[in-house]
Image (cartoon, rainbow, N blue to C red; front, side, top):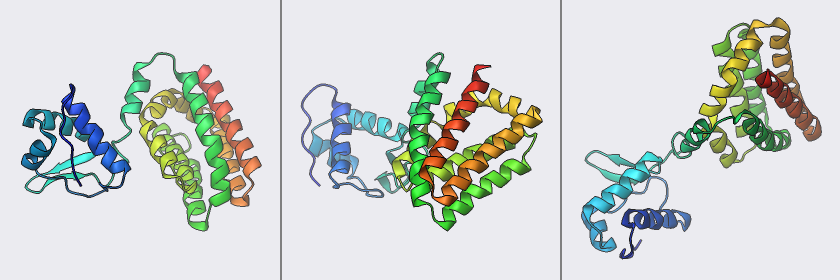
Length: 232
């Protein structure tokens, strides 16, 4: 591991770029400890303030963590923080309901096909568990939203693609925000509530059968139905 002196403007950004590049190249991995502040300032030829500015930015996005008395480390678990700024970007935009549904269709129709192909018994049990929770949560908006979120997360994990799960997790906040009112309408209407559960069960059954086309069809039906509720 060897750092290069920094010479141009925006010093903190170049420090960030070097650390990111080392991660891409495999020189730094999850859990690795970074050199001391004194060592880094000397190797990078930067001030302590520039280094701390870079570290502050990397901590905000969840790439590194500082452990008291131990030093600074590449974070082992980036799921919770690394992509969270995406949710904030969506939230400051206006009238993104339609864009959000389009994005979910792009991600989840492909995801459900992968899930139907790769599902094992353990992942099927996890998906079914959340369908059962939807049934038990009839009339309760909070628990129904929790079950719905769990269902889609379980499906994303079933794809075996870590980036799909992390991306879905990164925009979970904005999805919850825009689906909150729709869920209230669902649980207050018995027919809508039953349709909501039935659609998820249909997706589960298609994945269980390993039928990619049927799974995709069921997911599109569900997302179109959700879009109609959001447009009301």
